[in-house]
Each structure stands twice: as structure tokens, then as C-alpha cells.
Image: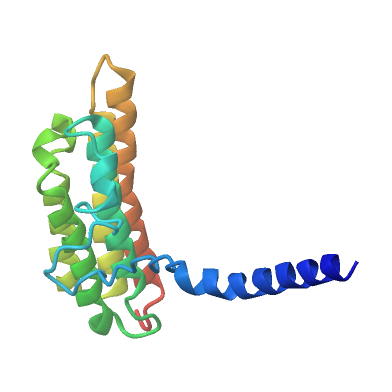
Length: 198
């Protein structure tokens, strides 16, 4: 009995000693690497993890397919809408119109590379947006600025209606892409409406 008790105690002691030793001898796994990349400032290319056209969106843009072109236009419109939404509210038009004009110009610049690949009726979208940008910047009153934007929205709608294609996919693509321009213009109009004064 004493011999059995001795053997049992020795086994427990060895097990108790082996556990810390095992913990010390087993290398801990390396901590997961943390990327320090982040979106750069103006003019810098976004990191591969970004949602920009050089990041994740690049994998969603299959060349010059309608879906790929629409996604590029969509990304450009999102950036322009964000720029317009950041323009101040409640100030006179004179203090806001440059910001709104820049938002329109930003979307026009985003559409420049893809405009030649759009259905023919929509290839003038960058020109239409720049016309609106220039005239909003020159407007003296809210009424004048809103009339400019309303006219360009109507022109964009007409351009969409002029798209003729046997392929329903092309028609749907033209409608959605032209609609992005109309949405950006509508956001500019909403900001103008909130300006102080007349």
C-alpha cells in the first residue's frame, strides 16, 4: 500500500512539473500581422484594401462591361455626393456655390475616362455636368442657379431617352448611369434651396 501511494504521488508530481515545462517549451504562435496601410491623402493611390477603383472595386469592375462601367460611375457619384453633402448650409449662395461647383466638376472628371465607352447619347455627360458647374458658379441668385440645374437634369433625362439598343442590358445600364448624374445634380439643387437669401 505504501509503495502504491509513493508511486501515485510521484506521478502527480511529475505531471505537475511537466505542465509548466511544456508551456515554456512550446513556442507561442506569432501574433497576426496588422497592416499599417491606410488610405493616403489627396493624390495618393488608395491601399489595396480600399473601396476605390484601385482597391476592392477593381475586382468588381470586369473591364469595359456595362456592369464594370456602371460601378466606376457609381463610385464617382458617391464621391461627388459626399463632396456636395459637405458643402455648408444656411449661408448665402455666394459662399456655397464654389463648393457645389467643385462637386459637379469632380463627378465630371470621374466620368471622363468612361464617357467614350458609354452609349452614344450619354457620352456628353461630363460636358453637361461641367456646364452646370460653370453656370452655378456664375449664378447671382438661388433662382438662377436652380434653373440651371433643372435644365441640365432635363437634358440628362432626354439623353437617357435617346438611348436605343436591342439589348435590354444596355438600356438598363444607360438608365442607371444617367440616373447617377441626375442624382448628383438633384443633390446640388437641394443645397441651393437651403441657401440663405434669394
